[in-house]
Amino acid sequence: MFEGSLPALITPFKDGSVDEDSFRAFVEWQIEEGSDGLVPCGTTGESPTLSHAEHMKVTEICIEQAKGRVPVIAGAGSNSTAEAVGLAKHAKEAGADAVLVVTPYYNKPTQKGMYQHFNAVQDVGAPVIIYNIPPRSIVDMTPETMAELAKLPNVVGVKDATMDLGRPQVTRIAMNGDGDDFCFLSGEDGTAVPFLAAGGSGCISVTANVAPRMCSDMQRKWREGDIAGCMELQDRLTPLHSALFCEASPGPVKYAASLLGKCRSEARLPISEIADESKDKVRNALVTVGLLN
Image (cartoon, rainbow, N blue to C red; front, side, top):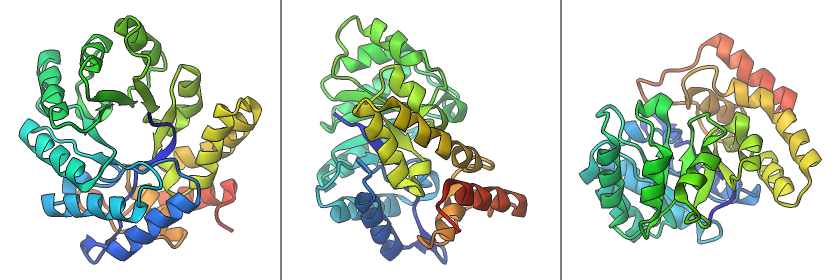
């Protein structure tokens, strides 16, 4: 259903408010550069520090600007099931092609609780992509729970940020042949290519915010069977993947975007301006990759 390079979009700010003009231009640039889809209001989009009104507005702007040219997977995650349901309803009504819903963080629900959470969200009727990211959410959805959720009509895939490259195969085995249409998307830029080899169809990417053409070409070359070309691009991108996580994301990637003239580096607390040493790492990586002189 979804494949290729899907940037987890940053949310530009200007003097504390969402910078709508910069965001529209950013969405347009992403499409022009070949991104295969757009993912607003995720972790990289600073959804935890967006108000509900801002969250909904950013989703609406992205959908409006995309104009159906590429799919929009709108972030609708929350550790409150009622809130996640509300965000999913809004995204569906706004015209999103799917919603990305993180496993409930902080609450530490059981597998049963996670199943019930996602069952409630999928009842909205929008296609749901599970976002499994144990390092941030503390909980890890098991392959068995995911296999049960995949039987539901609107649970269509996963963004896997477990850093376990065996997880797609183990999950498919747990699905016992019922997961042919289930979409496995990587949530880790550094292992995006090995994830494809494990049966993935694409990557919801931080790096694609600043290197959309390279990330899209890398994914396309894999689909076309040009493995050597795909690996060449991944090797080029590796220093940038590392630099963009030298501090808590999205601090580094927003600074990188500012160097490219796409928006200010401004983020919302508790994400602070990155240190000078980190700025040097990001700038040097952009130069190494060929995105900055």
